Length: 423
Ligand SMILES: Cc1ncc(COP(=O)(O)O)c(C=O)c1O
Image (cartoon, rainbow, N blue to C red; front, side, top):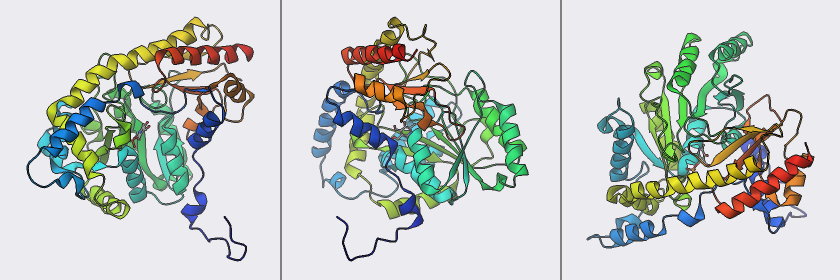
């Protein structure tokens, strides 16, 4: 409660810039409307959360001889054995990389979100620019806003593919405006992305690197691979920036997480940073945030990786997510959403469907369409939140992560019924 006598707190610039996350507003709407089916939050599937695997891991930790070090503070950088296991797992996916080379560059964080914050905190000052994919992960965009950093989109063509010629023009524009020096990083989600469920081909990533290099912009690149292991039937075959020749001269940060493919509540993420100084700066900042991060949660992750339980869990959840995706996609299709002029691609992984509404239909947070959806008992993430600039109003992100198949079908039916009213 505000005091009648004390003056208002003179908050820092950052304190003043922080705003309630848009997702919190959506969640409040969900709570205020009992019976509402939420396709909004990017939560994972409750029914397949790895309770047995986590219990077995904790029992195995407790049975270890010696002191229970896993309940003590850990080291800032993350548990050494966990780092070795993660380096080996990544090396197995990347033909040109070796575990021994990756391990010294690897650090463990409180979710990959913390790594994103560390990356931005160590690279950017207010007024700087970060190039982002289009559409992009909206919590990252909010993070940039909070830091006073401007997001500029990496242009895409009509099919949603990276458009190197348009990027070339955009960089030339920034150069003419004397702003190129403010470009501090480039960020993209490259496998079954949030929100578009899009994966970036090696050629697309290479074209971005070559275009930046032509402009002399060897800025740090952050590749967010949060959903790489969450494919339905087969992995998306593309090397990461760590292994692509075109990115050789760039400082690189590759990020991944246990939250999406294993257990969100453990909130363990990790990164590989190719640049020693940048890595040191991030680890220093991390020490200021939390020093001995969630050692117990990391120990659980280490145990499930070592025992094979992590791999077994992935085998179990991939078909489950595929069924959930089909339940929602099927409901939209059967309801005739496509015939109504809506377009979406059937994803090969991840937890989202990304819908383009007919041009002219406003699906934004304040739109009549959004209100009608809430009144009809279905919630989505307005696509407008997912763009760094030049924000279109006619996109929608639907998450099939949380609801079971029957509820997904019902949510899909409700969504279609509103779309038909607005046709
Ligand atoms: C693309 C992407 N990156 C990073 C994160 C952060 O994940 P976490 O901090 O839970 O590891 C998310 C979470 O939704 C995401 O979708």
